[in-house]
Length: 329
Image (cartoon, rainbow, N blue to C red):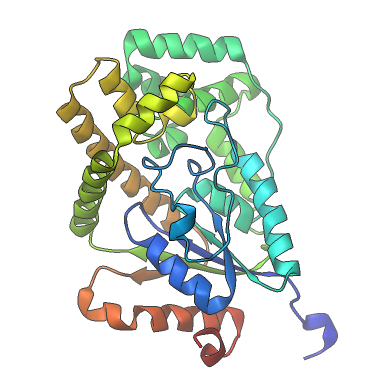
């Protein structure tokens, strides 16, 4: 092999999958074996004091593995995909230069993919008056009516967004208002599908039988409620975090806000949270299926879980052209 053909791009390991599929436990085991540092690829774990609803690992649960891009933003301040891309890119370079393996773990598809393939984001700007108008429209006409407006101008984006994801639905409408072009069209252009990744990538996606995944989601929601999700949301509101902040529109927070404001009964809020989380998991899977070069691993069959770690190590070894005995030692 001549010198010009050597691929000296940094290695980047990525683990994605729907919520509750088991990414966290596996990521710790892999990080230990691979001398890796974990970068959260979750759009909600950036917010401080939003722990239970985001299924955030606390410092004493991280088993000594460095974790990045967690607890970096106050809940009242929004966080964007372009900010994530910039910060994550910096972290990858820093980890690489220290001789360790950068390892993104998370379920926010756009965030993860933007880093893996160097999406180009335009500085489109904002129209605060339009946002306020759309929020008022949603309050008067309902979330579905707002979502229907998006479907009329950008059916591709509408198909990816749940009607209750008010912040992102409004942003998609706002982008169209400011540019005259659908957000989905601009995202397709930003992807640069023919562009080579700036990294030597290994992307692993975890999946399992849909019914088992949904069962685990329901169990996770029940565990969150037992752990004090209502108190967590109450504390955030007491601190002055607006109920319509981007962070408070996330899964697990908007449903509890609805309960605390008297818009929904406790049992109803829990059932809505379980339903919307199942819908979210379905959208996550749909997004990941369109990611390039993703290696799927089914983690739902207990009879095959004994060799799961070795199978994943073999995938990593093949992608990175590294001796499997070395990375699994």
